[in-house]
Length: 256
Image (cartoon, rainbow, N blue to C red; front, side):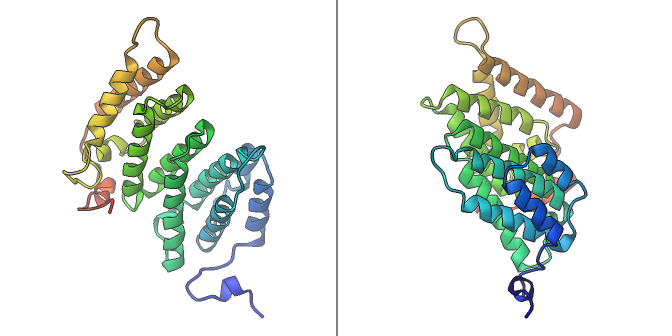
């Protein structure tokens, strides 16, 4: 009989054997350089979601504990690579199953961004930027609102470790140069006036973090200052007018 996953109505096409082999080898611990090479050519549209689902399933089933802490980080990094390889197929899912995979992807980012482990948080924030770059006005607005709130909450929480704050500051600095990010942040993604002013929160947080309590400047201060300079440069180059491609993200109740 035919393979059940391929025959199920609405559940897409099973991945090619070469894609499966690539994913399995990467899950067993291949280096990131090997991952980039394996997916360099991207996926066929019908296989992209099956590969993404394979990695998401592996991440959901990853055990945690002593000696296993690096596994979620490696899977998050692999998922970032898969998102880039999926590209246009992820932006325009052809069916219900593919849409569900995309929803699960956004959920993965949100769940892992709540971690207190600096390395895992860095991987989750990196994945969020990759997803935003690919999806933009499709579904990334809601995810980025959540990511911004989580990142700022961790950064402003006095109990947060210095390592966590460093991760947050570095992530915010990288978000500032992602095309369309500041523009969508400025309009609060969904223009909901009852939501916190995310743009203001980011600027205030970075401004406070850039000022040392006492000399000399710490790495924490320098990262915040670098993020502010990146934001100013981006606004100087692009302004705050939301690009047409981002306009689709601005809709009432977008994060709901």
